[in-house]
Length: 199
Ligand SMILES: Cc1cc2nc3c(=O)[nH]c(=O)nc-3n(C[C@H](O)[C@H](O)[C@H](O)COP(=O)(O)O)c2cc1C
Image (cartoon, rainbow, N blue to C red):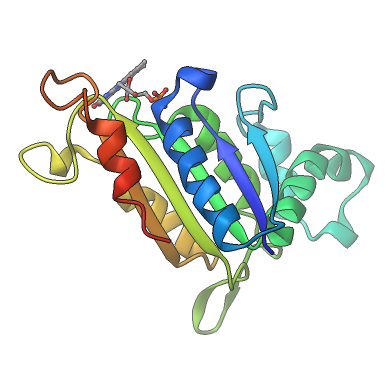
């Protein structure tokens, strides 16, 4: 039995390919770990603010030293970090927008990458504090990026690998439903992506 946190970035609801792929993955995880609980977090319904001066100022102050205003502006971030720490498995489903992730997902990442809470600096350099979790990232794109001439235009995998590893999340499995704008590929893209799922 596992606690699964599903972070949903696509605004397209049931029509979303990334969400469909993540749902198929979650069905497999539920079969593998009967009784698992899912917390679905739709970033288009629960919107994270872009970091403003107030966030940037508050996030660098340890919680016990924050004043009331700094504590208030950190609340959403603190709750989000707690959700992440509570999960055994993190599933992120995301469209590719302009070769990268949607800004809604970037804003969520900005709220979980917190000095003293999810990473810290020591004499040896940065240390991720969120360990022992399995991560799956389901990516949907109009083009094909896993191989071929467009591979170098994919900024999702390298970025997510780096930022998640920075907070300690290194066990990442990327799943791709790709080529959904390309006739001849789009018809079978989802079926292929689902059959490629490995837990
Ligand atoms: C604003 C926007 C930007 C997009 N940028 C890209 C892109 O850079 N590369 C690509 O292959 N597809 C791009 N697409 C296509 C989406 O990645 C594709 O429709 C995908 O299925 C969306 O994910 P979803 O079905 O989970 O919503 C873009 C779509 C939109 C709406």
